[in-house]
Amino acid sequence: MFTELQVNEFLDALASKEPVPGGGSGAALAGGLGAALVSMVCNLTIGKKNYEQAWEPLTELRGRSEALRARMVELLEADTQAYAKVMEAYRLPRDTAEAKAARKEAQQAALRHAADVPLRIAEACSEVVDLALPAAELGNRWAVSDAGVGALLAEAAMHAALLNVEINLASIDDQSFVAALRERIEVMTRECTQTKDRVQELVAQAIKG
Image 1 (tube, one colour):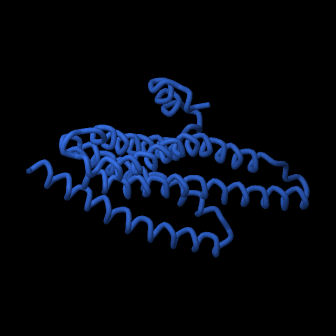
Image 2: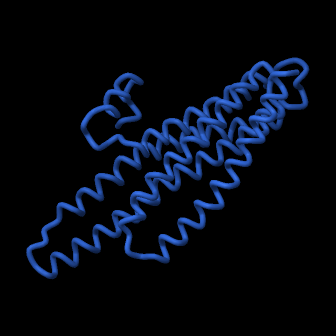
């Protein structure tokens, strides 16, 4: 499992000529880093004097960010497996009309799955950005920059994951499926960017005092 590698080992795997891990897995890792930073802000605030009113909401927030961090690990592995399924489908025989039809059907199913996994990564990243907002609002002011970094990483990871969605959508024949996903992408992207911008405003205000 790629998630069991040390940091340098994972980066070596990412840099290699092998197709996995790739961009989707990198996006999941970046999203996981964003979630971890949200948890860090919570941990640096809970139990601290002068932040008593924030302890309870940030404890709940930490539970959500930790759940997202764990989900990113699962999605990182899922992305590598989804790509493998696509490659398997393209290697199927095509020596008869029946084999060609079965190969085409397998390819389309694998491509839909390969689009769905990075979409789920993007959605999880968007959720991390959502959590960074209350972290910036309620968290320890000395850790507010970490909330900002978490939001920036997660938003960038969302866009990165969506590139992997788009490259698979380009080969999918079912245009109703493609249109439905692109509609979800448009709404997600707009809302996530707005939230990220708000987090950065709060961070800038807190830094300036």
